[in-house]
Picture 1 (cartoon, rainbow, N blue to C red):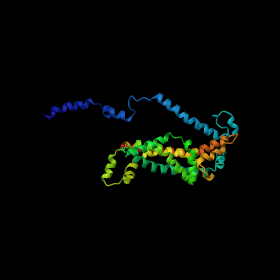
Picture 2 (picture 1 turned 60 degrees about the horizontal axis):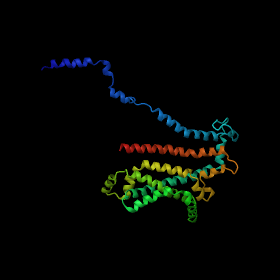
Picture 3 (picture 1 turned 180 degrees about the horizontal axis):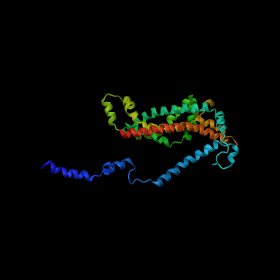
Picture 4 (picture 1 turned 30 degrees about the vertical axis):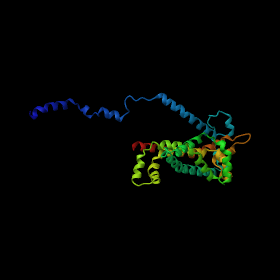
Length: 308
């Protein structure tokens, strides 16, 4: 068969394809570039998310509006905006609570509690998760979990007396108490996460000659980024907003945290709501910043784990 006999079919196929069809992208490529066909917006779920967001936005709006009002405007509609925003409420809250000193105390206690919690609780959970087949470690795990069912008011007075006898009724003693009391929940969270970490990674490290400490800090601990962020957020919010534990432990007025100094706005017969809400917003601002940063850390850790 000659080459001339093959040429006409090829020419016919090329002629059947118009210039518009040649310039048009494939159907699969156009679908990938835009939204996938058949995907619809779930309006019921969207409406539910809007309603749930209102449960957060409405109290926040009420707090902001109250902080900008005068005491005389509180007798009107609670959701009405202030006629003349009073920024002096924030200055009064700053002065009455000695905000810099109280915020520094809260920051030191919170940072110390978060750092020690992440370092110590992760090691305890790692030892338990890798030795769960042993009776002693399995008993320790159930012992820590059972502590979740013990309310703090039951042991409040003995703890306060013991810390006073040991001269730990200060910020350092409060940090250790946060680390110890958070151990029950944190071990439960860490053990569940560590059980999903492949043990082949540790076996490979042991084969290379690494010890148990090197394996934990260089192999296991970097993999705990997402769960460390979760535990860190819970500990940070607890230590920053806690009122009862600093109330019964701290003995020096100079060591009081923000929740304690904010109690000054509540009198026997009245409460200064406008200045109190201004103080609450000032104390809320650092936690919002921490949440934004930690949220990005959690998302990036999850994405790195999915890529691996």
